[in-house]
Each structure stands twice: as C-alpha cells, then as structure tokens.
Amino acid sequence: MGWSFCSHGFKFGGSLGFGLSRTCIAPLERMKLEYIVRGEQGNLLELIQRIATNEGIRGFWKGNLVNILRTAPFKSINFYAYDTYRGQLLKLSGNEETTNFERFVAGAAAGVTASLLCLPLDTIRTVMVAPGGEALGGVVGAFRHMIQTEGFFSLYKGLVPSLVSMAPSGAVFYGVYDILKSAYLHTPEGKKRLEHMKQEGEELNAFDQLELGPMRTLLYGAIAGACSEAATYPFEVVRRRLQMQSHAKRLSAVATCVKIIEQGGVPALYAGLIPSLLQVLPSAAISYFVYEFMKVVLKVESSA
Image 1 (cartoon, rainbow, N blue to C red):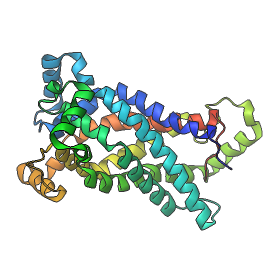
Image 2 (image 1 turned 90 degrees about the vertical axis):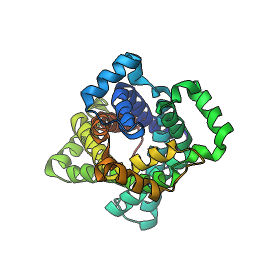
Image 3 (image 1 turned 90 degrees about the horizontal axis):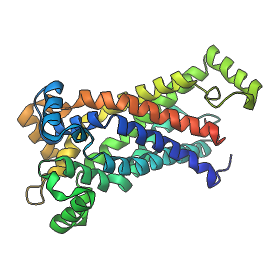
Image 4 (image 1 turned 180 degrees about the vertical axis):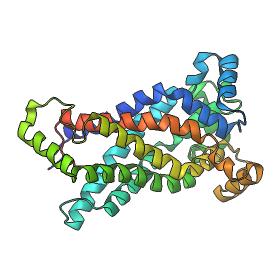
C-alpha cells in the first residue's frame, strides 16, 4: 500500500516503547557503562552498593535523559528505515514475500542509517558517565566541552566500530524477529490465527489483532534483542572506549581492541554483558510490542 505522511506515525510507537522501557531499566544500563567505561571489576552486588552509597538512588538514572533523547530518534529512524528499505527490496525482487536475505540487508542498512544520525548524543552520554563527567554540567555542558576542546567531529568518536557493529546488529535484530514471526505464521496454528483475524476483522480489540498475539510478540522481540546484543557486544565495548579517548591519546579501533585484550584478555571485550542482556530483554520486547501495537491502532499494513 502507499505510505501517507500520517501513516509513518506508527514508527514512533517503537521509539515510545523503547524510551519508556529504557527509563525502567536505566539502572542496568548504568551498570553496563560502569563495567565498560570505568573498568569496574567487582560483581553486580558490589557495584550496586557503591553507586547507592556514593550517589544515592538517583545515581542509577544518571545520563538517562540524554539516553532517551538519543533513543527516541534512533528507534524512530531505525524502524522507519527498516520498513522503507525492506519495502524497496521487495519491489526490486518482485517476490510476494520478503526473503531472509532481504530482511538482513534491510536491517543492516537501517542500523547504519540510525547510527550515522544519532551517534553524537550517544558520545555525549558516555562522556557524562565517565570519570570527571559530573563536572561538565549535564548535556549542554558536555556538548560545549567537547566542541571547545576537541572540535565538532569529536562527537563522532567511535563511528567506525559503531557502523561496523550496527550493520550486523540491525541485521540480527530485525532478521531474527521477522524469521521467527514468519515461521510461526506459516504453522497450522499461525494460519488458523490469521484466518480467525480475517473473519472477525475489526470486531477484535487491538491486542487480539496482533498477528503474533501479545505474549509471542514480547517473546520474539526479547529473543531478537538478546541475539543482536550478544552477537555484536565486543564492538560496543570498543566504541565506548574510543569515545573516552582524548584527542592527544586517540588510538584506532583496532589498536583500542588490542589494548583492551592486552589489559584484560578476551573476556574484557564482554565486560558488562550480563547487565546489558538483562536490560535488552525487556527493552527489545516492549519496543517491538509497542511497534506492532501502533501498526494495529493506526491501521498500517506491513510488507511481508
């Protein structure tokens, strides 16, 4: 079907869900950054106690505002770009249904597009959470400090590993979800559900109009998010370390990766993976749920 300007509004459903979920699991995101940026070595309980003692409860939500400011446009662009790229690939191929290869290509392209446009806010948040970030005066202060001391392009530190990681990350995130969704809808149970939805039409409430149903939508979203995070996590660690480097001591992505391994071995590339997975599971689940729910509410059809 043709896309109208208003129909694009459902893309913001995904970003809204992601933003709300980010606030709920912000403490886990904060702990992940502690492991990556500050080189935290203690277990989770020790880290929780230290943050609570030194900064109070509010410390667990440090940097959350800028994370939401980054997340909302990032997920909006990501979901919108994915559906757009996937639709264009479907037209070019002439197939009735999107192939797995097209899903992965569209997901990779969407991840790269969103990263290019939203990396500066991610860099600012990393600087705020890092040692000394408290003295910069929040988002505006961190932004001003980086521009004045290192120039505008310092906001794009870590761009290469970010793009390298977002291509497979986006491919896995969207590809896994769509593969699981397509596989279910081709089962006897899935076909029966689609037929029931077709017969009942708009008499069903919005939740019952979800093709996968509420629980399966949440489950598949969580699985897709976890697979994506685990597959590309070392790139995340390298990117955060690059964002922390000063202009005078800047290393390349490869040199930074080698330095991380020299200091902590290969496991250092997975520092903070557990809290990261714990926050990704509900975040991805809620994001996909709201995304699919808004498509139903706004009556937007998706390309198969």
